[in-house]
Picture 1 (cartoon, rainbow, N blue to C red):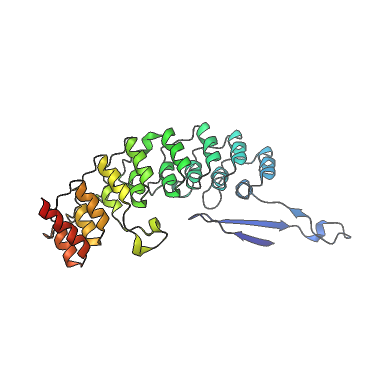
Picture 2: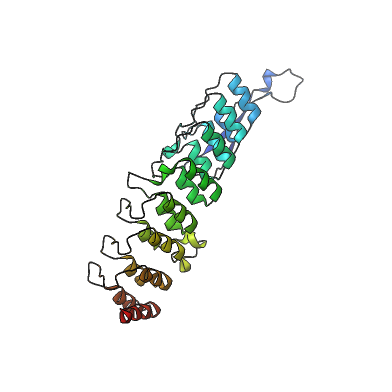
Length: 308
C-alpha cells in the first residue's frame, strides 16, 4: 500500500488519499503488475476535482452528504476549490447546500472566502442559507470582507442585507471592514444600515477597532499600521460616536494620541472630538501625547485647545 498526503491551505482541513493495489497473485501469472483499484471516496474525488469519478460514485449510490475524517463534505470542498460544475452535480444529487463542516463552515462561506463568484451564484440559486455563522462568528459576507474581493462582497450584500447585523457579540462585517481599513466596504455597509455604534463582546465599536494596529492592513508592516483615515471619516459621517469610550475610559482621540496617529487626531478633532475628555486614570489626549513623546500630535492638540 502506498500513501500520499496532500496539503490544503485552510485551517483544520486535512486530506489523505490512498492508492491500493491488489496482490500480483490476483493477476494471471504472466502479468508483472498488480491491478489498480481506485478506492477514493466521494469527498476525496470532489476535493481533487475529479468530476468523472464523482459522477461514477454517485451513480453507484454513494452518499452525497458523506464527510471526511475532518467533517468536511464534498460540496464544501468543491465550493472551496471553485468548481461550479462539481457543485452543480452534487446539488443535483441532493447534496445539502447548508450542511456544516469544521468550525461551522458551509459551502457558501467557503466560496465567499475564496472569491469563487461562479460557485456563489450557483449556491445562491440553490437557496443557500445566508445566515449561518461559523463558531468564530464569520458569515459569508464577513468572509468577503476578509478576502477583499468587491464583486463577491457586493453580491452577498445585495443578497442578504441582514448579514450586516450580529446578535451574538462577534465582530460585525462593519467592524471587520474597519479593522482592515476597507473604506469602500465601510461606506457601503453603513449605507445599507449597519450600526456604527454597535459593540462586540469586548465593548468595542467600529471606530475603536479602526484605531487598532493591524499589520494585515499594511502587508505585515507593523511600523506603518496606522488607521485608514477615510474609514474614520466614513464612520463619523454616518453617526459614529466620536467620544465613545473603551473599557479603560479612553476615547478614540486619546487612543490616537497615545499611538501618535497625527492624521487620525486631525480627523477626530474635525469630527467634534472632546479635547478635554480623560480616561479612567485622568489622562487626557494631550497629556498622553506629551508623555509618549509624540510632539507632532501634542502640537496639533495644543493648537486645537487655543482655537477653542
